[in-house]
Length: 292
Length: 74
Image (cartoon, rainbow over all chains, first blue to last red; front, side, top):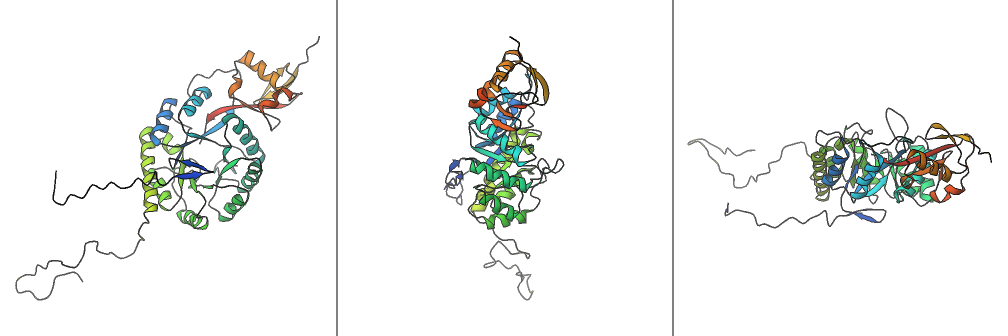
């Protein structure tokens, strides 16, 4: 309905289009990176990628099953067609590698197979925690950048490790939110805030541990540049709807960061002006009833 | 002429082969196992073997060959 006080319809500028994420010289249309594992079916994976709007999807390399023709879900060939047709840039990972040497060989194989020099570098320190082996990570990063790779290192929020990775030639850092697959959200937001402050010009992508869209929004609000997630979407009851929810959360968090959120304070402060407050004193009462 | 057979490890499993090179092994797997060699990457004994080098990569007894293909990943 038309009302006297209807605001002018001055559409908010689309900050997303004016705010591209640039990774190794490539401008990305989305700040959400989506993993492709653990979906209920290839069809749902395909729909989830589309719903997320992700400009980058992560992929992996695994042993070809010699002598077995795999027709069911998980079939490498069917999967490969889906990601190729998704239009998203491919970010191959070195998931499961336990040493720098394994990770380097896997990255070399991935570069040939996927036709990209991008690699999400994982060197894993333990089965139960899947924490980054930061020493192996720095070694592998150094080798790979010298071979022309563009490395996206899955790392902790440790600042010294981050410095070593940058010195090794990385131009992007991917600190964890929490261990892979836990869905716990940001275990240490303060550390990520410190990382943002320490490396204001380096793209920071929170990778792993996100469970809900609010976790992604929190990471973006505190200034990280993008979010990479997989399990939170793949294992949701409705992965496609959850992909859409994460897309909204990442965009909302980014807009909030750019809008410079207010600082929290301990005491209440009225948002409605005090000036001009009506006074409804009882007849004969003495003194104002206005708040002190 | 006697064909020499060697036993190698392919993706973790022992396999007898007449192939003398990595390219020969892939041809054999394509012919007998239906392997699609377009979408695989290879390594021998932990070292990346680029597609262009497969024909000149010899195989010997107990070599460990990895043949990997694209898969879902996070």
